[in-house]
Length: 461
Image (tube, rainbow, N blue to C red; front, side):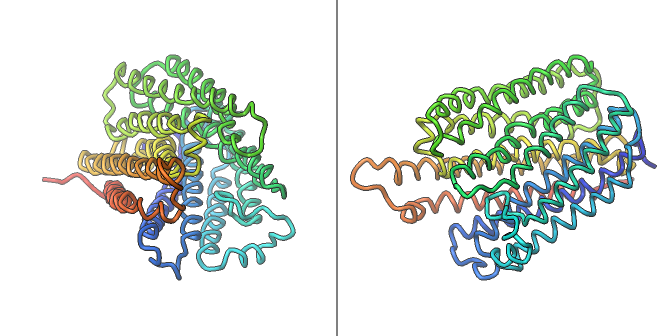
């Protein structure tokens, strides 16, 4: 029997399930790439490195989008205190988006990229060939159609129901996500101009509007699991999203340092990027403060752990590791190095992968009709998954940071003589890449433990 407040919240389930399947695929392709760093011809004929990288990064984006959409379909009816406007539309859009995603990934794997561009008509409206935005134009159009239908559905739900701060912040973030994606259709011939507007999608998503989505989901979970007054949590949310938007939007400047842009971007980018850790630090204080002030002991301990872990890992990955190389005088030496990869891995995992798993941890027992929480044995498996994945990601980040520091030292800051070439430097970094690969295997083990938690039942006497 379902324990959902509103029956239409159940449409979140296929979104969550498919998100986790794609997440597993992302990790597998990450391990393939990691091995190709040190065994150059591993699967080189079947899955070349550039293809593995496309699949790895595209799966990351798509599974997080599925997770965000599932989160919205779950929490917006509960916040608005009304059924979803059209559950049938939500299910129809799920199948459209899933089909588009699967066909695109199969296209990457089975067809040479230039051939894929040709058969999808890229020459008539060229948008392909840019990292993270490699999708064929027809896929991008499909994403826009899905986004419009999704926004219509949740917008109508909010319109007919209660308007809460959480709903409005989440809707603002989701509208921003859809609007900034439109810049993926702008593909100027000038490469500096192209990169300038490319960051309008990539940066203003992950360091702008996605932070609103994360903040809204975290606020919802904290209200449900702690029983703290909504007004208190909403005030924190206002402060955090204001800081996130101000620092995130102007912090885009840290991508404009070396693009033939005016010199003032080095000042704007450095100053506001230095402030970007503040909203994440506030999020840590907020999450722990709310849990300490809780009025109830929620039975879903795993969801509370995910919520606290999200705040801490987002602060470390997006805040601390972002700050490490964001100031222009430092970035001059570090940009495009493995330090960037270190920051990217922990930031995406801490801020976005973990918040999706937070809402899944809280919502899935209710969707599955189990109650407020999984049984204790299932939660123990889930917590093992949490710790294995999180500790593994910390080590992946540390190993990539070590590789990046050595890379800068050997390739860009030689003490004597000439700098090493790129490939000669990569040879010197192989120990870090092997260690990163081992940590990646432990991450996969953690993911498998997390998946196992969905199938564990309490032992009966």
